[in-house]
Length: 333
Length: 265
Ligand SMILES: Cc1cc2nc3c(=O)[nH]c(=O)nc-3n(C[C@H](O)[C@H](O)[C@H](O)COP(=O)(O)OP(=O)(O)OC[C@H]3O[C@@H](n4cnc5c(N)ncnc54)[C@H](O)[C@@H]3O)c2cc1C
Image (cartoon, rainbow over all chains, first blue to last red; front, side):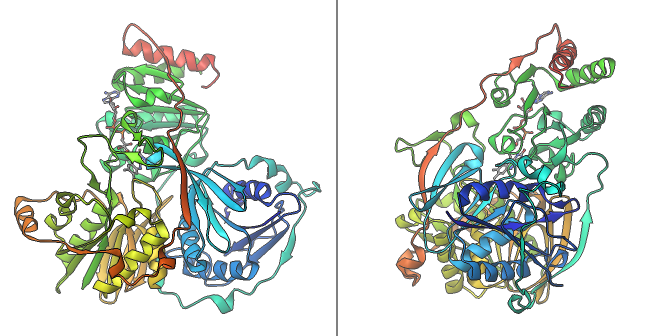
């Protein structure tokens, strides 16, 4: 029986998928009779989300929100203050831009043990044990989080199921997931003067399906040899209602924008179908796509490591395979 | 202006997954034989960022590279000097291997204050061995300075820096007061290769070496809170079902038919 504090986030569609995943994790870590508390900072006009949490804080202040997103200093100040007051057993974050900055700063401020990018966490004799991929995904490590005070755990996207709460979150008639108690905490006294200023935000122009949400991802790597083939990949992605991904090697070469990068330091995707062309399957790439349900690899090298992760493989030159594949897809669909 | 770059020596991450092995204890990684360690890739991006600032600055700029570890390959670490850094400070101590991320950050912060003050501290966005990405944020917190992460460009403007940082769907431009810490990503661009002249100059320089106990840290400050229990190489899926055909074009068509059959397209 424990108290779990969740650092929630909202997006355009309300509470994010990753926050719902944290709730699943929190429920299981809290145990019977435990308490799950969610805190949202900088949520614009967020109404108390119908989360299956016991209580929710909606902290609003003009210093929080987008303005704070260059260094997240204000969010760190407020969350650290609230965490000190609540003194939970575990504080959970999702691996987002914000989580990646706030979680470690908060952990150091509280002198708490911290682990990031975890795929699992469980209690063991009063300590939290986490599992996380290390060495680019070449190994999985288990760590014991000791130290005094709460421990801070950040989860990898997709580490838990979010679906369980979806219905409840949108269906006011569902009783088990009815509104949690709304609690108050004044952020103002804790926010220090900002040392940074967000001058500008640039959006990479993107049409169509978001890479992270796509059911089909068509990815290209160094084996494509240049920027032009990505036009063909985009054509195929359009045809299948999917999005275009890439390996870091292709992005670093300047063939496609880095916002398409899939992997450890790029985006995490888990589509129904992941089609890869000219990608070798380095563990740092697979870290972003290995939870895809069906991976297809097209590679000239029969020994390419990606054939060990793929469900279907073609040993062949993308230049021949891809056009024939595209026209066959046209014919049968 | 004084810039510090925190850099770490790591096993070469560019080895194929099949060559990745654990030591017999099962608690450490055994680097493949005949493959030298490297400076962590993102840390080289950070060195590159520092050198670009130095090149564009109109006042004197000094770059100090700081590393904590044990068993340094000096020729590897000197690459930073050969590409434009001025000083190399190594905290070389067998017990550095027992530090967790928080302990490492304590050691770095103490070393930074011993050799400081610095106007700008640069780090790679994460290290390719333990993929922790939080040592820089820990250091910023300990030094009580702001931290901007995942930078692809840094411009210095008097008492502040303007940083372009990569965010999931684009970028942000952030102005931050100095002193500050900035973590650097590969989007900054390829780090330069050392030129012969740089290598010669670096070969004449010696690192300044410290032991842990010279830094004035208490045992409590560096006692690990995160303890490695076990390491395991994950099981791969196995082997893909290979799609055949008389030539590559036919394989492409057969792939479409197979995927259609599975109702995947
Ligand atoms: C800390 C760290 C983080 C990283 N993060 C990421 C990340 O987020 N995402 C990522 O992708 N990488 C990442 N990497 C890099 C990663 O380790 C690999 O270097 C990268 O994924 C390789 O990209 P690739 O497969 O396109 O290139 P390569 O490994 O060079 O593979 C190219 C493949 O193309 C095949 N090929 C060549 N010609 C053809 C042809 N005509 N037709 C078909 N196939 C062909 C070759 O056989 C080869 O298998 C990271 C590395 C580190 C150290």
